[in-house]
Structures are given as C-alpha cells and as structure tokens.
Amino acid sequence: MGKKDNPRIKDQEQYETLREKGESKEKAARIANTPDSGKKGGKAGKYEERSRNDLLKKAEEVGIKGRSKMSKKELIEALRNH
Image 1 (cartoon, rainbow, N blue to C red):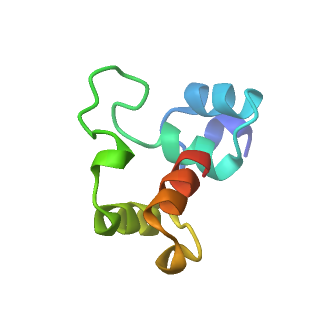
Image 2 (tube, one colour):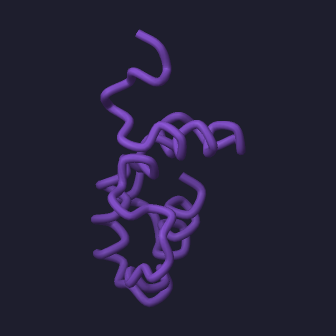
C-alpha cells in the first residue's frame, strides 16, 4: 500500500504539504482529516478567550498528555505547538 492509498488520510495532498513543512505525522493527519481545514472564516475564537475547561476539552481531543496539571497559559501553548 503506497502513500496515496492511505484510507486514514482524507486529504492526502494537504497531509504531504504539512509533512514537507515539518509538521509531525500526527498533526498533519489531524489537520488533513478536519473538514474545511485550511479554509478561511473559522469561528473558533482565540484560545485566550476560552475558559480553562474548554481548553482542557480541546487538549483531550488532540491527545495532549499532562493537561490536567497545566495552567491556562500552558494549555494554550501546548495546543498551539501540538
């Protein structure tokens, strides 16, 4: 099975572009599998405007370990760099 045949990646072209830019396999796959990723007009809002509980939920979704012990500032940094 070649790279182009990976059924787990929904947007193979975007995945390959992200990998070439140095993103991890996990992050590139997560972005490539997100509907409408890369399109303008997102309504998620800034991390700083979200509550710590909202950030904890998002950190859990993306698999950040040690999140329960992180401050809001640490959660924001971890989410941005994951």
